[in-house]
Image (cartoon, rainbow, N blue to C red; front, side, top):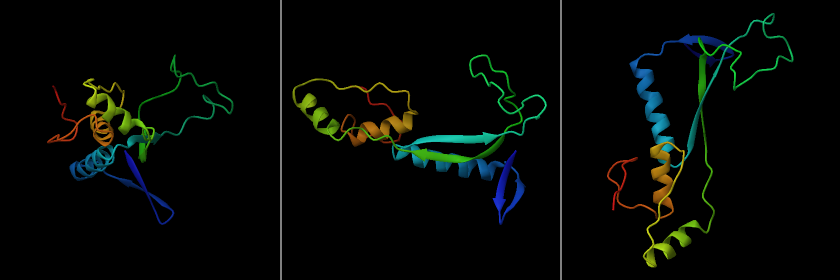
Length: 131
C-alpha cells in the first residue's frame, strides 16, 4: 500500500506498473550518481500491544514487519575522502591493482569507483570490469 500526502490529505495510491517503473527509475538514477538510496515505510501499531516505552528488539524481532506502508525514498551521499582519487592514481601508476570492497548496491559502488578512478569506461551502470 502507498499513501500520498496531497494538500494535507492522505490519499491511497495504487502500486501499479507505472508507479513501479517511476520508483525503479528514481532509485537507479540516484544510485548511479553514487548516492545511497533508502526506502522508508511505516505501520500503525496497537497501543495496547506496543505501549509507550516498549522495548523493540531488532535481533529477536518482536514487532510486525508485514502490512507496512511505503512512505518514500531518501538519498544520501557519503563521499570518498578528497585524497582517494590521487591515491588510486598513484597506486595504478605504480602497477598496483586497485579493488574496492563495499556493501553498497552495485550501481552505487560503480558510480563511486568511477568517480575515484578505480574503474573506467563501463557501458552500463553496475557492470563489473574484469582485468
